[in-house]
Amino acid sequence: MHRYFISTYSSTPWREPSRPRPDCLTPPKGTCSVAITPASIKPFAPGGNLSHNRAMPYTAVFTPETLTRAAVDAGAGPLVLEFGANWCTWCQGAQPHIRAAFEQAGAGVAHVKVEDGPRRPLGRSFGIKLWPTLVFLKDGVETARLVRPQNQADVAQALGQLAA
Image 1 (cartoon, rainbow, N blue to C red):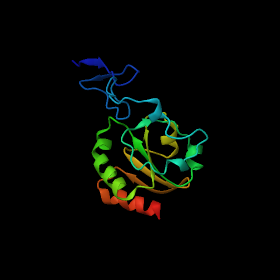
Image 2: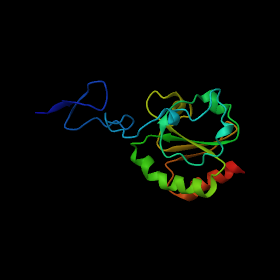
Image 3: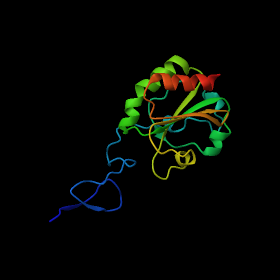
Image 4: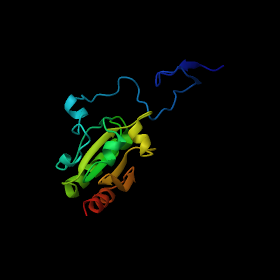
């Protein structure tokens, strides 16, 4: 005889014997411990002008999606979009490498962490499948992409190509 339970990982009741639903894109309710302020939700000026953010070398917290693909494509200058989530262990494990690379080589590159998940249009428009994914853009055109970076050298190399 099987024991069934209702999963709390999604809004749809779902029954499965013996273990919870493996849903990697939706965190369990109540796990987000990051305080999001209005300033952190609006990293860009209205109108999509990305050029004023050049002196923003590293961002520590993923913020809910506020950008549109049109604003990103119309941006001027170098930009790194990092897709992931604050609760993602892969994202947390990659942060020391990303931070060190930005401290070393990314002083003039804007870094925006976009909180990704189901039905998030910006992540879907870039075809994001795994977290963290770093998309390196120059004047709105993708120049490089790193999926789950394993070391600082890979991130620094992509930043170097972007700054050149």
